[in-house]
Length: 113
Image (cartoon, rainbow, N blue to C red):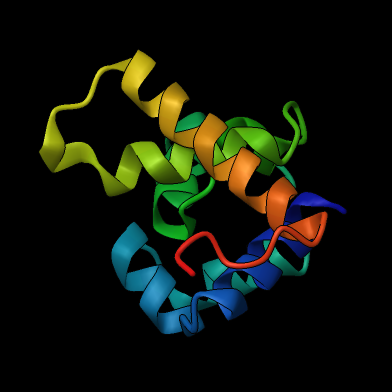
């Protein structure tokens, strides 16, 4: 998946409009549209980091340098900023979430049942 596809797909997954993303980035709506259509091919590092934050993705995943697992880590990290968790704590949460998902995928049923 290309960076522009990742941007558009994730924006839609989060239910954000072009205007929502543009406002959070401090750019014009047309700029976000141009990111999604690959009219803008060279984004600055500051825009990539900000866009990743808005889309709750890791910058590395957005750029294609990391796999999807990095997103899970980044998502947990951004969700738990107020909890003052260590990197080890976040790694533990990611590992547990992956184990639960695998267990459910193997027909392990609901963890809460």
